[in-house]
Length: 103
Image (cartoon, rainbow, N blue to C red; front, side):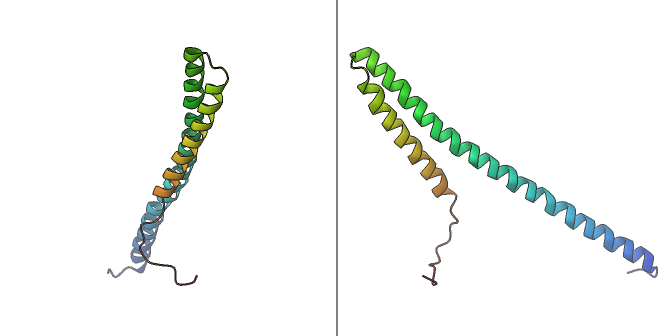
C-alpha cells in the first residue's frame, strides 16, 4: 500500500466500518420481516373469522334460520383462517430438496 503505516491503519478501519455498517441493516430487516409475518398471520386468522361471521349473519337474516347460519359460517371462517395461516407458513419453508439423513 503506502509508506505510512498510520494511513494503512486508517484505510483498514474504514473498510471494517463499511463492512459492519452493511451487515446491520440486514439484521433490522429480518426483525421487521418477522414482525410483518406475525402481523400477516394474525390478519389472516382474524379476517377468516370476521368474513365467516358476516356471511353467517347474512344467511341468518335472509333465510331466517338463526343461529345456524352464524354457527356454521363461524366454523367455516375459522377453518379458512387456519388454512390461510398454514399456507403462509408453508410458503416460508426453505426450498431445499435435500433429505434429512439424521432421521
